[in-house]
Amino acid sequence: MGRVAMARCARQARPRRCPARHRRWHRRDVQADTLERWLILAGIFLVDGQVVAGVLGDGGGVGRIGTAELMTFAGYFAAFVGSVISTYELFERAERAMQIARGRNEELQREVVVRKRAEEESRQLALIDPLTNIYNRRGFTALAAHVREIARRQQRPIHVLLIDLDRFKRINDAFGHAVGDKALVEFAQILTATFRKSDVVARTGGDEFCVLLAEPVDGIQTAMARLRQNVDDSNGAGTRSYRLEFSIGVARAMPNDDDSIHALVEMADEAMYEEKRLREGAA
Image (cartoon, rainbow, N blue to C red):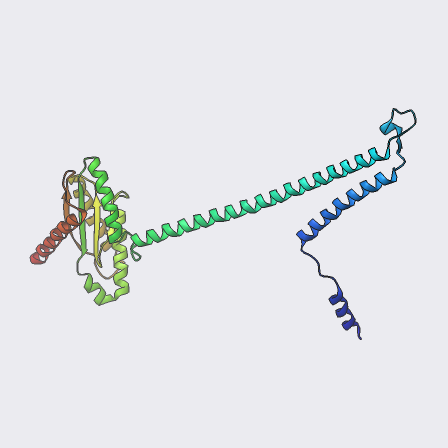
């Protein structure tokens, strides 16, 4: 048999090592047993009862105690040491169990945070238009009802603006849907820059947008003028080969009116198409 074979046999014959925690507990058990054995042996060794007088006597020589007393003392002492070791091991095991419990609790808390974050992201995705990154129809309906209730408590009117891009189909037909998507994104950015963060801006259809504002009439006129100016500035920049044009309709509800958000959108839609017809008739 060669050296390689002998080395292999030696490795195979080598005993398998236990896990670290098993070795640790085994070592503690051996230490406890060894301590108890040494105490019993010490009692047997001192069977004649001779001890150093400086320990048990008065310092005047060697004293004597009985064998029974010594054995009783050794037994009590061994039991005491064993109970101390057992108590220490129980405390250590309890501490390890608490550490494991704390680790699992922290892990569960992290899982809860991740799950809530995922749920919040899913909820936001359900309310956000993925192309323009503003609210979709569902998001508009939910937030508009909330803003309506706040305005009603504050005795303020609300206005719904329905905005439709004019001749948007021509942009798609002439330049392709990718350019049409860019036009929608740019118009959404103009709306976001025009209105306040407290206003609800949404894309509710293909080329249709809605804005809800809790503003008096003069504030609405100012906002609409600012929107037209921002669109004109974008068209005048010369960065594209088409113009953005839009028609707009407005519906108003006073604090004591019972019109729903859906009804206000329909009224704004009728006003928007009326403006579109007047513009096309004038052209």
